[in-house]
Image (cartoon, rainbow, N blue to C red; front, side):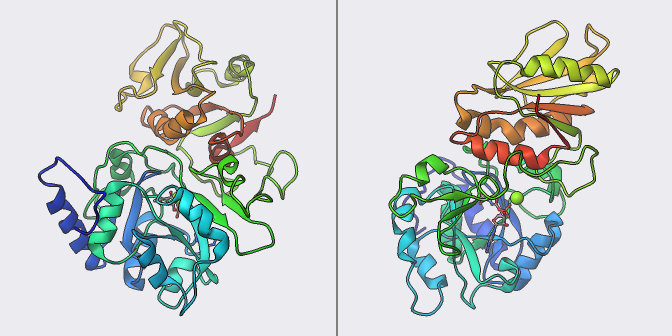
Amino acid sequence: LEDPHFTTTDPNAFQILEHAAKLLSEDQVIAIPTETVYGLASNALSSEAVKKIYAAKNRPSDNPLIVHISSLKMLKSLLPNNSEIPSIYEPVIKKFWPGPLTILLPKSDLIPSEITCNQPTVAIRFPSHPIARALISTCGFPLAAPSANTSGRPSPTLASHVLTDLDKKIPLIIDGDQCNFGVESTVLDAIGSKDPLILRPGGVTYEALVKIPGFENLKVYNKDFVNKKYEITPTTPGMKYRHYSPDAEMLLVDVVGNKVMNIIDREIQNFKNKTIGILITQQNAKLSDNIQTIFMNGPLKCSSVSENPMKSNQNILQYILGDSLQPKQIARELFKGLRYLDECKVDLIFVEGISEEEEGLAVMNRLRKAATKIIYE
Ligand code: TXA
Ligand code: MG
């Protein structure tokens, strides 16, 4: 193995990597852990392999993929003839790679058009996860990898999440335990317009990027270009294409502070005889006989709530995401919590909104897209 960063005590690890690399060299699609979320990977230089990604996750064909590399040498080999990495990116690459940052670069003919959906740019990321890095360098070619969920579902942060969505559709899932960031990479475009733009907030925060020379005027798509309250969210599910969404209806309580539980208590009255899931921070969790509580990092399997009759006539299950003052913790648990409540077959999920500082920006971006309804007060 070329990669000096990969150390392991698992005697089978190298065999698994070789096996995975062989599948990838045969244009197959496999799931791999990354530091953000699990990825659904295939050879980024093969149109045939890339098409299989879209098929496996039922992804709309107009949503471009990220190309994952394991060295700057590999990156340079992907740029158009004789071109250099645009200098604006040098300090961010130095500071944040390998890691949860994706940058847009000019696309060369080496990259199949299925990856970029006919855009002039290609999104590139150098992941820090030791398994992802070792696998890419074992392959010797870059890997295209969207999140390894069925399109529209919450992204997978555990191997079991991938299995739920893609069992029998792919030949291999490499289990690397829980993803450390839990939300996807930040997608950054510093070449498309005058000011650098965060297209998707993620693991590398706005606060960290804006400090970098050349990024003083950094903008955030949607936050800066759509005024106030973001897009209007339809009040009935299915009216628009949802993203990151659990099966249950999801109501986002976009109120920062301690009024959240009062609002949920009030809203719950509209849903008598339903089983209710609540994703909440530890500050606002309510410990009561009528509410079953799951702490973050709690058990992964859940029996259906209705099989666990509770003391009240309403079944309420609350999942504590973590400390609202530590948005990194909330981000790490977010998709896991949504999927957990879905597994419990709740009818309805209330989610507490958090402040958009640091990783909170990525959390709120995902929650706004996942919600069927947003409650502001
Ligand atoms: O953390 C991540 O980025 C994960 C892991 C697996 O690396 N991958 C991921 O991929 O989140 P995906 O496909 O779920 O999201 C890719 C995002 C989409 O929002 C897509 O629109 C954007 O990157 N994107 C990709 N290529 C682009 C391009 N050329 N121009 C603009 N946006 C692009
Ligand atoms: Mg995705």
